[in-house]
Length: 479
Image (cartoon, rainbow, N blue to C red; front, side):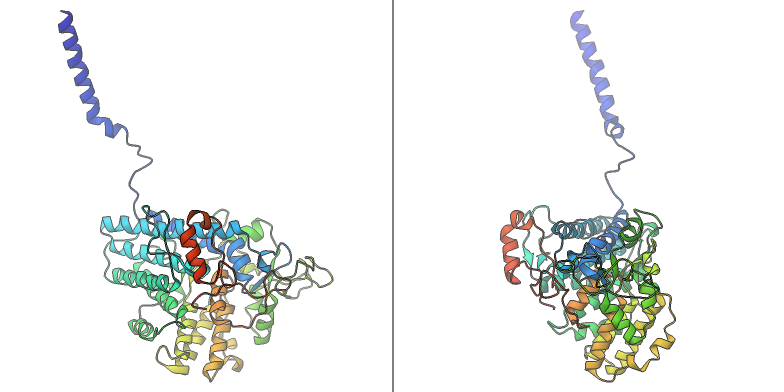
């Protein structure tokens, strides 16, 4: 009897165990934390984080707009004197690699598994945006061995390799988006609301910009002309890639979050900008800048704050006397621009002026005036009377080169890093280094992250050596 009870108990236990096992996996699934993420849910996060990283005032403001001398500061201006915070520089590298490039790669892999070739193209564009930003800010970076969990110490690729890789990513993206299948969820896409035709225009417009960036290092004419002939680039301001922020933190524009919500009014207008705009009779000055306490618009020269303390009543470098940013640019909803129709036209103007694409000076002027008009319209100003000014016209290549680059610099007022990058390429307008600065020249790049010499020493050393050292003044190959 005892043996029978033991056998019966064992049979019951086995039945219970196998019955539980049949539903065990279902019972242990958490419906609120799925293990598979829809690919396009990664898109909006990557877009927002990229703009937050580059528009953040301690990054695109202090080390972008101030170094391009569009902005200045009347206090707390170490960065404007070329002493950047190393932690901020480190975080910028980490954020773009992890929140733009890596997210883009994950999005691509998921979209590929789903057979969504349109989303694959979008993911390649996001990776290209991240990689190009990094190579322009730092120089040689990990590319061919980047975002690979099996490689803990990735090699740094030289800048030419990275740029060619970026151009190839955009070429692949254009092919996928031209004949794509699948959709992009509108609510997940902060640039275009899921409109893949606009993503195709962005891929081609970004490719044009990347080619122009390296136009001083190799022939780019045939590739640029092919893009012009293809016609699938930005055609109006509606095509520009930008994020419109919301009205409250933490989803407002980082400029507003710092200057207004964070009560940091030390960010002011640069004297170089006010001088040029006043000389051109440019009405954008009243949009870019706010009147000072006396009702005037006054800019401050770059620098000071070392031997000469800031604020400084004797020199007039005070909160009350130097104009702040204009109300238009202190809106919480101010869009963060990734690339604009205006910028594309200026690049096409330069390409025509330099003979990279057909049309010569006549075509260069047509694109140039379109670029000015598009930027005026974006700023809410009628461009008609300004464009009619004879002092904007040009009849020679050298004069065109100067006037096109000057208008590029003016138009990139809120795009700090892009303004600094374009200035580093053209060196127009002529700018003097900041007064009382730590360097005797405007920086050419950012430092590599402080942990790289410890975590990836051999590859870091090789990369730094290839550009003459890990210095702010080490020249990059496209400059």
